[in-house]
Image 1 (spheres, rainbow, N blue to C red):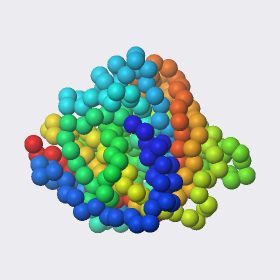
Image 2 (cartoon, one colour):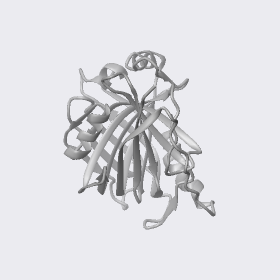
Image 3 (cartoon, rainbow, N blue to C red):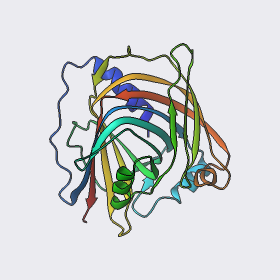
Image 4 (cartoon, helix red, strand yellow):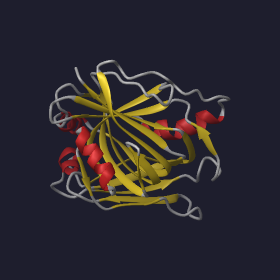
Length: 269
């Protein structure tokens, strides 16, 4: 899973594009839509960590039947914040979220309704943490592992080179701390570009053993930055057991988006 390339690369690739088509493909017939979240004015900080053979074995053991890791798997830890959203038509205010996920090869197929879905990044969700009750309840009802907790995101100061960014997420599912050193923004602040077709698919299995996927489509992207970062986790937690250590380093990325549309589906077969 190369979400760093997806986030930053999408912004840079889109600069050269003259059009940005909107896909109309439906999800496969065996899937029904169960939720939609439409956000606005978002920003994030993420970290992708390549897994060693020992970590890969422990990570594979976390996946339910029907999922397998990619040949060169990564762990994604990401925190985001948005100015607001609608959840199944219900308006919510400012919120933050955090997630931990593994790059996978899914056994089902889904497509975004929002973008042409030219590049698909599939990830299995180990945790989805939230600060908004409505958003958390929707994810829980769909079958994702979620909890309400405190989340902080600081994208740093433009006066700092490298730009130092930090994110923390609490709770019990996957508490994390990330510190990253990133480049200055690769696009001027206030300039955004259309996403050329990079879609993230967030997978889980619900309590009934059915596959669940959310197509995450960022519409316009700005202020991309890339660099390196370090994840710190507490002993005894899920990520500590998988990593086998308190810290791990990887490639960091950050950016902003005018908004995203998350369509969540449950597979009936």
